[in-house]
Length: 403
Image (cartoon, rainbow, N blue to C red; front, side, top):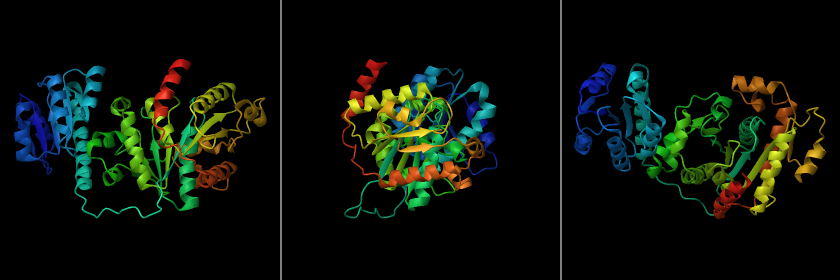
């Protein structure tokens, strides 16, 4: 059911026309003051606020309403869209903002996506299965974060392939969390359509539990599951470090391994992932800018007291002929490489096809090195890094001084 709030009936009529012949009922009211009355009477899945409603009134209405109605999705139509309106709308929990000039292209798809999300949320909220309590001795899943301070080093290729290799070699439950919130590539690596993303999970954060979170995960053919990055870069504005911590905590209860892919920067979200990690794999390639940046990252993490057993190092394209030797890189960093991944022309082909190398070419040298890395992850002694959440604040201060 779709509720339209606008002092003009034009938007209501237009949306009604879009859903002629469907089972969706469209109801319109002329004032946000009537939202509670209309919701009680019609129980809408999607609420569309029209352009005649002042934007500040729309934001206040969304903040007050959505907290108590976690399954309802709210959209907003505006005459003119700018970055400030978009940012404030996302912070208020509004699912999408559509400019009047783009209604023909965007209105129906946006409403249909919101209806699908609402349906999935209601299913999760209505689950009556008994809660399974943890048996004595059960351990939470291991959190493995792949990080680099430089882009283009193959971090997403390594993290997504390692996740599949872990699942295949251990038979355990594995999930990939894409924390590159603006330009994440996990969906591309796995050839997944982003029907649901971390942005959807955050919109329901006040009621998010393990069962609901499962509804936002995409499933790869290997059995690996993924919580994808937002479809639109601006949606990242509404995702905070606190949200990410809550989601990691839930994923740790659901999966044996939580593999996290990150952007190449020390954002608040990345700092949270690092602080929650059991193992941190720093990725570098055989070039001086990459080595310099990873050296700085290692120094920073060590200054903050992360155990040496937590900080790992992966050298990608380790066989590149670039007038550098592997032992020179290891000496410079003060770390032995936990894995040395060779170059291979099958990598770009694998990425373009959306099929992990460990599945398409499991006998190749690069696949063997990725399976070996997965074995190291499985066998690593875990000296937990959890519980030291003050590190996040310390790291923020240090990063500011270094920048």
